[in-house]
Image 1: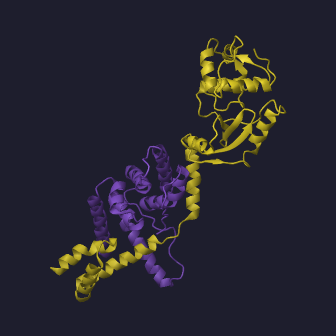
Image 2 (image 1 turned 30 degrees about the horizontal axis):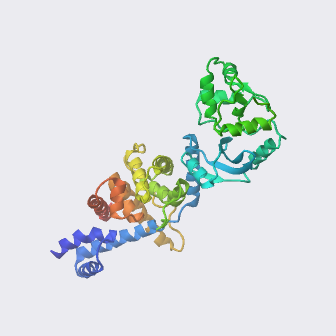
Image 3 (image 1 turned 135 degrees about the vertical axis):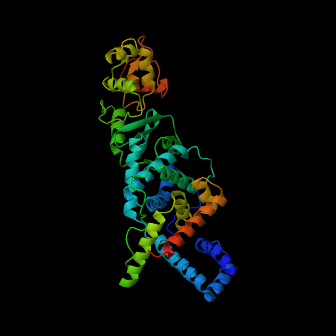
Length: 246
Length: 171
């Protein structure tokens, strides 16, 4: 009878689910009973092997490798690592984010770094501020606002926009410093005359304003049209570029 | 037990990965016995976790949640390497500080254990690993393999019984 109990409890010995007093009773039984003593020994043998297994060293190299692979998997799935800078400019505080491929975000009117980071964290698992790594971004924007630079050489990452929007934005990049064009003219230039409303929509989804100068696109009538950063900002940017406004 | 324990919940997803990457990778390597398969499942685990992370309620326990994702991926993973999986429990055989014969005995015992664990049904194997090697509570094991606490306990005991039988039978 006691042997039955012993065998029934044996598995719990390994998982550590038994009370100390129960273990003591079992140990005494195993010492006096041949077959149960054998089982007792085997169970402890198994436990000893498991202990060596549990103690295995963390394989740091394997973890680093898996993490690197994970990063590229996230990148392929549209969640790349994003680094960002915070800049003080004539149009207020700007946050500029970039992936390995290029600038992917320019945000106006956000003063909280924490909130900006939280927003980016919804689309990327890794987001951090990197003033040194993005020194080139800072320098080009500084030079632009100082009117020393009229054409950005920074690459942009437009992977998150639709092909149509990307087409509109790439064409917008060709509008020169100090010049303006109309929504209709831009539509015609991408081969979709009459699509000026759609072009306006695409410009409204420009993730990288200033660097892609959507502020240089205005209404046919000469009115400003729209701008994600607000019309005041659009006016300031055009003023800075020396565009006479109505 | 090389498990990182933190008192505060991860502030963002990157921190979640930092905290749990080692144990999840080790768990998947132990389960699959194949480093490449483990790497694939590791990526899938965290890609899925990223999708669900923002929807997770504050105060949720991330650990069993990650084990659940990893376990589900493992359970649904196509058996591509044949029926028997040799489970890699440790990357290298123990050699430091042990005499040659002890090291040999240890290696033999470990190899036998690997084979025996590899022959366990997948769900039992997962439950056993979580409980014995990763220190999850029965409740967490239940949450991770999608069953009650009592069923989780039963899975672990069944695994132990099988291992004990396998390892005590000669040959």
